[in-house]
Amino acid sequence: MRRILIGLAWALVALPAWAQVDPNAAATYLKTCVTMYNNGNTSPETLAACDKAIATNPTNGDAYFVKASTLFANGKLINNKWVVSPDTVAALNQYLSLFPGGAHVSDAKQMLDALK
Image 1 (cartoon, one colour):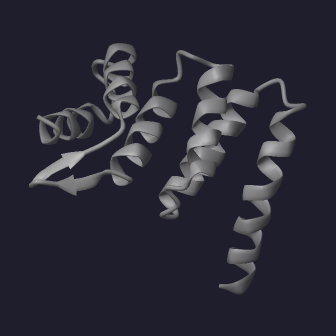
Image 2 (tube, one colour; image 1 turned 90 degrees about the vertical axis):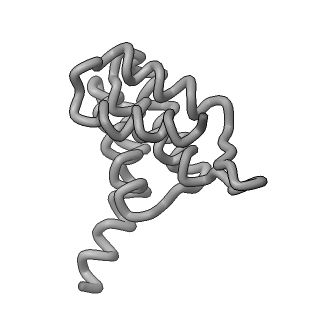
């Protein structure tokens, strides 16, 4: 288990460095952002990796979905309403416009409904 955690920590540090010279940088940044999010990391670093994935490939809907999911997770309950950054809704809508039949459409719509 320790080796896996060390390997994961190394990958999270090394992947962004590889992306700077990788012709497929968008995929590398997306892997970083997905890996961080899937490991429960909803920090600004995860958002930065998603933003880099989006900047290098603005048509990658998965980057928008993971960004929105990260932002959604960072929301706060205020007066019985889940309040998130406006960027959350924009990222969800961008995902839905890019992939109207995508794998995360149901999740994206549920998040949007929860914000009404």
